Amino acid sequence: MMHVRLTNSMTKEKQPIVPLRGNELSLYVCGITPYDAPHIGHGRCYVTFDLLYRLLAFLGFDVTYCRNFTDIDDKLLNKSEKEFGTPHKFSEIAQHYIDIFEHDMQLLNCKKPTFEPRVTQTIPEIIAFIQQLIENKNAYVVDGDVYFSIDSYPDYGALSHRKLDDLQAGARVEIDTRKRNPLDFALWKSEPDGHFYKSPWGHGRPGWHIECSAMAKKFLGKTVDIHGGGMDLIFPHHENELAQSQALQIEPFVRTWAHNAFVQINKEKMSKSLGNFFTLDDIFKQFAPQAVRFYFLQHQYRNPLDFSAHDLSQAQQGYKKLAKQFASVTPISTAVPGVASREAWAMLDFLKDDLNTPGMFGVLYKNLDAILADAQLAGQVKYILQDILGLTLEPLPEKEVEITPEIEKLLVERQQARHDKNWAKSDELRDRLKQLGYDVQDKKL
Ligand SMILES: [Zn+2]
Image (cartoon, rainbow, N blue to C red):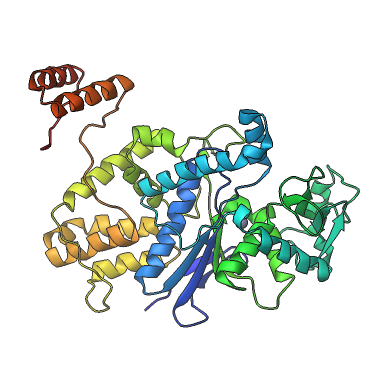
């Protein structure tokens, strides 16, 4: 049986995913900074790695999946300052957006990772990690701040395939004379007023990159089989993670680096900083989350996705049709080798080849009539779509209903009327809703 192969950003080649020990695999994916609602780019990233997680689990691997929350950071402190007039309510901001994120992930049918550590819960491990870097002469303290010294790590730039000279030319714009090299990055940021966390270098908080090195080590051990994230994280975030972790050990920090491409609008990267982004909640008002997942999966994760509402609408129609076609099919697990049919195998082979979902859908649509005509085959295919692709295949309502505050009020009033057994009022409210285009279907109370 062919192994799963993923493009390794380090070698730029497809690499088989083979466990070091038994059938255990570890997956680390960089999570969000919860200072705003997650956007479509986040949706694509986490659906991609959810697909990988599901595929590896389906193939019998025992996968430990860790995804962090950067719950203390400049952006969070600024937002707290703006909303509450103090930076110290950042945890409230973080919790609010973590709740939204988790709800969105649920709607997209992304499985929960094994571990979801937060920076604020990993401070002792982060401090210990920084201390080791200082002892090892990979980091230095200046006025309570701690910097990683990139000159102490000769392979700096290897992951992002950048030359140090080019990087340094770029970094010279903002020269901090306290740094030994302009590219040195902060491991610890001091807060002279005694806020945040106590450390051997005074009060402060961690810089961004160190958390992932500390968390990966804490939850997955010294070597991570697959480290994922969006392509925008390759430099500097993953380059820095790699330098920090590898500086302290001989064993490889990461065996395969996997990165998903951007979601673009008019060929520009969709991002908060460019102001050209849609939150997942915006999109879910118009489109079913399952259709959005289907839309992401129609594109191979390493290719940029040019977002358009028209394409998404088409995807929704396609998803609706697929759900209908498989509605009466009973899923049959294809996990037992030898049971799966040729078509199911062909679909799996495409998925195993660098998550080639367009190839997989190609097999599906090319053979759809034959698949649907054979209950055994249709059952196996439905299992793949539900269990690995994570598509629930629940039928979507024919007409998308937008519940306005007015409609909501009428619905609540009517619920009360039914509760009070005031049938005349309940019928009257039903008629009013019907006039507004809403057909209310009652279930037994
Ligand atoms: Zn990270």
